Image 1 (cartoon, rainbow, N blue to C red):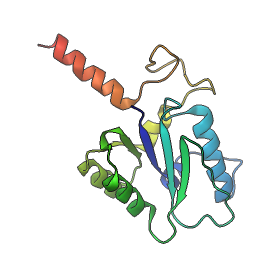
Image 2: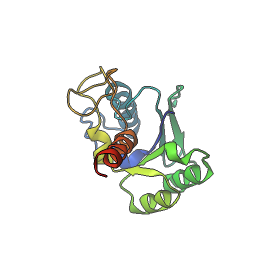
Image 3: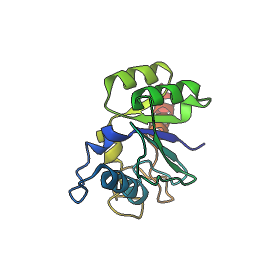
Length: 162
């Protein structure tokens, strides 16, 4: 089953230098291009939801079968992320990307995997092909998600370290 990455939008934006992007709108667009081209979320089947504080204003928004942008309008991105996780049915397939300590603690308590922004960005491919030449691949040119790598490691330990 595919994973659903929920990104703390501005938390991620502040970790990526987009020198050509001076406005928040341009930075948000640059982030979406980065996610589409470099795919730190791994498989193209993995869904991405980017949560931003505030209102969309002039932002036209972005929506595709695997990528959504949500503006919180009246609540904080932190609260929206926590609420999405709490309401989710398949918590084992959610990965929250944030460096915000309060969000990390809250969603971990719900059984959701958390990635730091740095770890998430380090999964980005070197080019638009979806692989970087280093890292783990599934043999089909797709990077294995961190949860999958961890699961494989645990299964191998059970087999070989009896």
